[in-house]
Amino acid sequence: MSNKDTAPAAFPRAGYSPRETALALGISEASVRQRIHRGSIPSVRVGTSVHVPGRWLEQVREGGLPDLAPRRRRMPSPESLIEWSSTQLAATSGATGGEAPTTTELYEAYREWAAGHGELASRQAFVAALEACGYRITARTTRRRQDGSYIAGRFVEGVHLRPSAPEVTERG
Image (cartoon, helix red, strand yellow):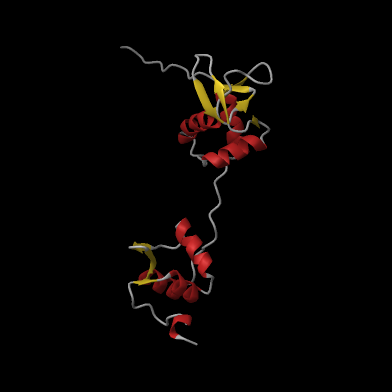
């Protein structure tokens, strides 16, 4: 067995290759590279090569392997999605409303609402939750708006965004 195929007993160097890291952790090199890409294993890029800090490997050796499970996308809870949709969306008449919002427009409105409620999810998770709640979402297409402009995107049929209420300011 060559020296390259054994895990180091201690980690005196500043950085280790993904292959050396895989041997030290007892997982595949592909898993190390995926976790580096996701950010669950710290890394430093030097030129074109990637290195895992020796200090991190030493901490892992002393304290055990940290949870390296893939992170799950945070989905909006059904309750918050129902609350958001009841305050922000209104049904349109007919199966396809001419002003159907895009998923991006809905997500931006959701983000503004969620900022005050602490329930933010990724755009992909938000769209998946809309589909799970029964909203019909089109394939990517281009449509003409009533003002004559064109917009491209995935549209959510049968709803439209309610206009935001104007802010009331007190004059004294």
